[in-house]
Image (cartoon, rainbow over all chains, first blue to last red; front, top):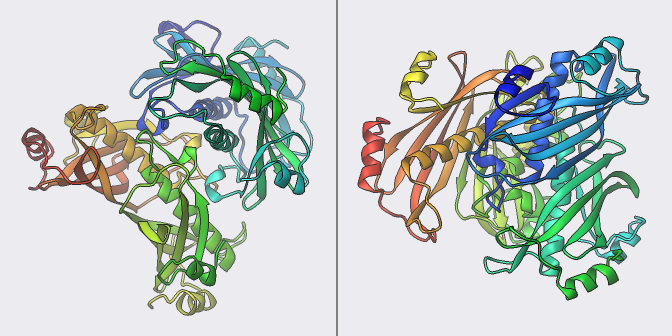
Length: 149
Length: 149
Length: 149
Length: 149
């Protein structure tokens, strides 16, 4: 896992706060012999869960709330092939009362290949109503991630 | 595979032209015990490839062009659980010179759970430049799918 | 889902008790353009979970036991490609005190493409010790599945 | 990627020749909140493809042969959970005329969690007949991997 400093040291621009370096494996490929589109969603999701755990936003059975994805979008700029080293990055770009936006990107040699965004909502544990984002979490998202509020 | 008539007979509204009925399997679930977000992308992709094959848009090694996904988005309205019967539907909603929009949805008992959209571009086989959509394909997308042009 | 009679009617030989017909989708393929090896494990697992649910062997949070896979093996006889119709079949071939063997196969046009076997163990809910298979379950496995005991 | 020396330095016993360190991600989990059984197959496959590429056994379109999996087995000793650091290891344990055995394992803190084995066959590019393993490859498998012949 990389923090802001390591991300900058790798020549990756932007306000990313968390990143995971890895390389393309055989299982990421599809019949076109390139990384399958849905694999990028998996990369973003894997990083998002780590991001939440580090902030204490993914609790145990007794957590008062959980996060859900309301919508997700991805833009593809260039394909990726077997063995390529890449870095998946993320940050929170907007925080509202109970919703927030997470931005993602995949970089190869400092060049952006794919970007993504998910609209997240904090809900109570039965997912029946939205929950106000706790102040300490909001503070982190604004201060550390530079999220608009 | 369902055509327009079978889709309507199942009580599913909208201008969908192709649908695939199935049910949620164990492998679709994640640690939250519901269908994982990226699985919907897999369902849409599986249906899209069938849709293209039926129109002759996915060729062999000697095809003059191929389709690529430029962007993809999904909206989630309600979660899905093990064993639920569902129907994945799709149609083309817009056709341009070389790009077109594909719309998708997942229905359970006639109720929409998830919708998706992908912006597709027809490119030459080396993916270096876009290719004009053949007239016969455009005609199908406008006439059968009701795509805006 | 097919029962014994439907399996026999489809020209599939053997003592299979449960089967699931489906067809190969794009997401099942890998870079060799054929069904990826690990996808067969997914097919077997998906059917196994249904098989257990029908017997009441997969309980809720308050179930006194659960099943675990101790070992799994697969033999591959012929590859499978996009669009092929296939049937995944299964049965229990052996039942011991707390362990049992499940057999699986994939058929295309009555011809076996792949076979699998998993050694299952019934364990208490904390997975710390094995549990004796309940008599009513054992009876089903011997009578219906023809399992050796 | 780790070689023999790095594997030994990590306190992992055995004659492994190649290893890949990683950690459990959200996408590896299933509804039981542990690493899904078929994910181990993915880990082994991902490492095997790298192993073949390093030996020149996976060629391009003009390669005279390819490798196929005839059978695969896995033994599970202990489950794995989110975030655990692990190492996947492999080696060739037997080489015949056209077939060979590959062994795999997954270690956490030097302790074996899962082992696997695949029976591989070298076949001509149309997969219609087996091909004798080239002498230079056989030599590597015997000398470096300690494969029985």
